[in-house]
Length: 71
Image (cartoon, rainbow, N blue to C red; front, side, top):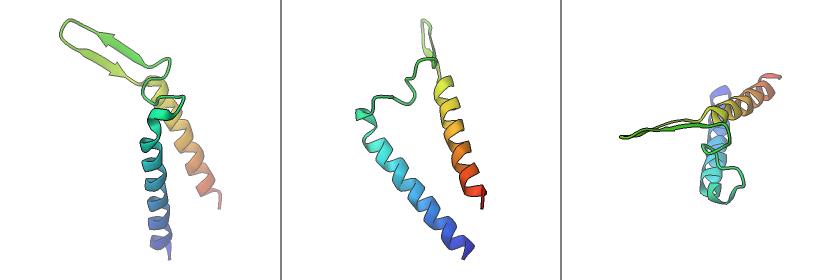
C-alpha cells in the first residue's frame, strides 16, 4: 500500500502545480520575479538568478515534507 499512497500524493502534487502554473499570471506574486531576485544585464546577455524565489520554494517544500514526515 505504500507505493499506492505515494503515487496518489505525487498525482495530487502534479495537479496543484498544474493549477498554479495555469493561473500563475493572475497571482499577485510572480514566482521568479520577486524583489530580491538578481538580474545582471551585460552587453551580450542577461544573467538571472531567482534568489528569493529559491528560498521561498525551499521553505514551502520543507514545510510540506515536515508535515508529511510527522506521522
